[in-house]
Image (cartoon, rainbow, N blue to C red; front, side, top):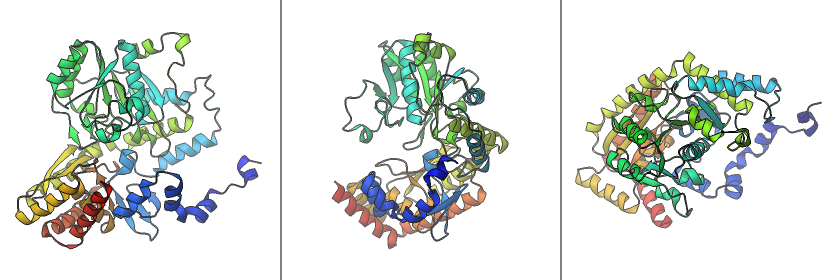
Length: 465
């Protein structure tokens, strides 16, 4: 008799009995502000099932996912190949996480991952993007014998203490000091980078090739020039590809868009999971790993309790197989060019639409101050209450009226970030662009429900401050 039969646990029955309490349970036992926020902006839907780039609510209405769980759902939801791999690994009954053997799945996944960055040699598996960054920070400090890490304004590298120390957003850092004494520079500022390197205490520079907050890409040539400066000063380049990696930007890694860039450490996570099992990976050069793990006494000097577990490794292997079989890197590049091009063509049609930027299926839509008097006065009221409210005004009708899930790209930013599953198609592009045009038409009419909702947001912002 199995443990399940003895316990009588029935997950389906539990969800049927208690699923309707979802918002009350969160309000009572988890983050109390999450359900409050969702109710306020009208995002308090109940979703019943999902497949690919779509999910369905309790009434059976189809929704288009342009958020992909902040990039986790690179293959969309419930890809059959990943599902089968997880069933297979569970059915295999492997002796997992003994900690005193060398199971094959981690080695196989490391081998496959390293094939996409042949200048790197070794992999450490953890459980998340922030763990991957923490690993890179520790390894860089130990390998170089230096304490300081450089990072960029508006960077996001995670929320644990080490990763938070290289987070360029003040809102995430406030109240959690003291953090590590690391140093922020502007993205693209080579002079600032060189000035800090000349002090001789820098271990590494960690950078997102395209920043998630605001969708700002490193300027052309910056990564290659930064790499040359770093190596000249015996410091390392860390590429944070947690969101940009695994095909998101139309290359397997976003740093590969710039010829000659070969980071010393690369952090990945999110899409490698297939949307099922948390996984993070830090790829690096052999000499760095050999310094950290320099003797048998140091064999466990850095580890993770659930790192390299069989389910995560099976999911990662299945994801990479799907990426190749379905040519999702090339597909992300082509679909991204189509979507970005069609949106960019609208900039001249709408004075509130300032810029469309990005690469592959990582696209930022930025709004800006309009020129006409009526729109400018409404814009000014929103900005005075709280920057970022207009972008939220666009996000809400996209969901409520057009059943398209998007979100702003960061607090107090007038930017919507599109990071859909890599499996979206031309019909999904048509659906999004058509819906976006309708929302922008209403915004430029200057009245209606959209601006009424804007007034609600202003009242909420005033109450929150």
